[in-house]
Length: 305
Ligand code: FO1
Image (cartoon, rainbow, N blue to C red):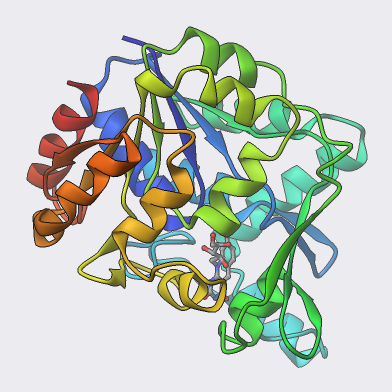
């Protein structure tokens, strides 16, 4: 069975692991968000692609959900002594990946090629594709200013209410090699429990991707990133509210309605299932908090059924 997962953020990486564990090698393709990419200390960083790589290869820091487990901060400590910014944490092992990516991008290699090579070297049987090889950057509009995504999320701790989101470069961006093919060839397309505004939209907004998913709506299933009115991680509920959407699992379902014919709700939200009828979305109720292998197995079975 071929499965394409559209994924961003920590929820996207956990869903990738859920499907990766359930499927045979080579059956899963993850299409990852690059809108969160940034340059820091001169390094090219792709947090969402790296979080998938670290999660699928057993390297992920289980507490933060990003970065490498047990990583040290020797390089960072010295960089700070020398006057570099201290607000974005880069562990030593993580930096090694950014060094190789930066060097290879500067030599003219595509991000998709570098990502595939890293996945191969780390024996990752799942194919990981950036949505695009072109430069795409998410900007967050607040009442005072427009901020680069990581400055808004990490430096300012998502404290500023979101008035809007802009994807710099998206009009000119083309899908990376294999992205549209993976969507067309998939038996099942999964929209991860990711923030739809800042994790899914910068993927879906790349030329042709949204239309390719809509064309497959009957085979598309979205997993709610909201459980009991709370986001599993990140400022999604506040964003739903500030951007005029219902701040719960149905608010997200409405937003994804044109794309997905089925929607997974956690049992905590089972009472919301009838609301999906009006959206022509089939309700699937199964535990979605991917904290242990038993939940991941059950969620994968429900999504792939
Ligand atoms: N998140 C934080 O909250 N603080 C950090 O200092 C931080 C550093 C960081 C470095 C590399 C990386 O791949 C991810 C990092 N993240 C950090 C997480 C990142 O901001 C978010 O997971 C995603 O961008 C959200 O999709």
